[in-house]
Length: 107
Figure: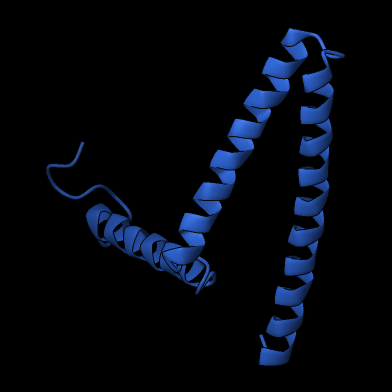
């Protein structure tokens, strides 16, 4: 991916996150205002509050992953998976023996 494309994608994702976060913050503000007036039953408050806590946990996890560099090279796990699969296939072929049968002592 070219540097120019990466910058464009980063800005687009950043704009989407900021826009979504702003909308979410506004809805939370409205929710708190409504809950404070007593217009909302208690069960709705508990449900929405638990969703807020779950969302906060997800955001903390995403921030932790970003700060630890997990998004630095997103292609590397794909290649590691393919290398591991190739290694397992090689080991299975060696275990079967030269003619595709199980090696001596194998069940």
